[in-house]
Length: 83
Image (tube, rainbow, N blue to C red):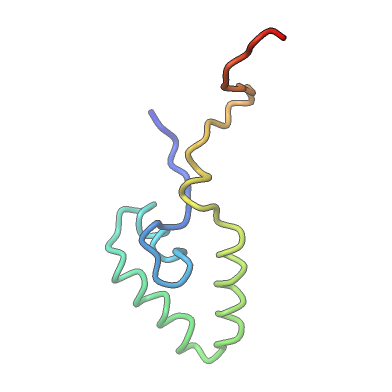
């Protein structure tokens, strides 16, 4: 069983936050993006929503960074030659 990780989407519109949330829960990306934009714009606090989105974009990792194994073991790959 693989552990799911919340990462940004590789199919980005702005920074991949809403796409990553949609991929994590298995939802339609377009609907999540529309709802997210609506929640940022229409509650009346556009600055607060934009700051929250920016912080989330900084905290979420890129999908290429989420592929590594995090089990605590360090493995160095390469070729070792004697001098």
